[in-house]
Length: 129
Image (cartoon, rainbow, N blue to C red; front, top):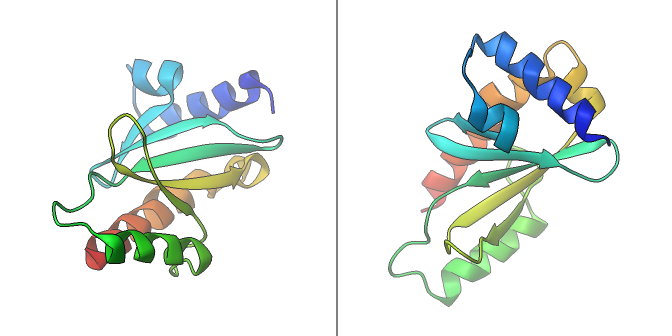
């Protein structure tokens, strides 16, 4: 996927959301969804990657917590498949979603992702905690 195609999708998203001054979205791919930071980057050919910052692990996180994280990678909740990981610099839990550019270019592609899938993922994660 070319960076130009992703940039065009981000510009369209900004227009659809009525956002005028979006340097974080247009230049860094950063957007706030469901009170959560989402970084949108170029993914493998024909897709983009969304990294959803779910915050730090609980203070008392132990082996059972990290085991549950790994289990969710194999059996994702109804919100759809994603990979849970730890961001090495911040130590925050991050959910990674790969989205097809073709799907995002459809009439309701961004709306479904931003208004349904990501909020459902964030809610499921908060319920898990």
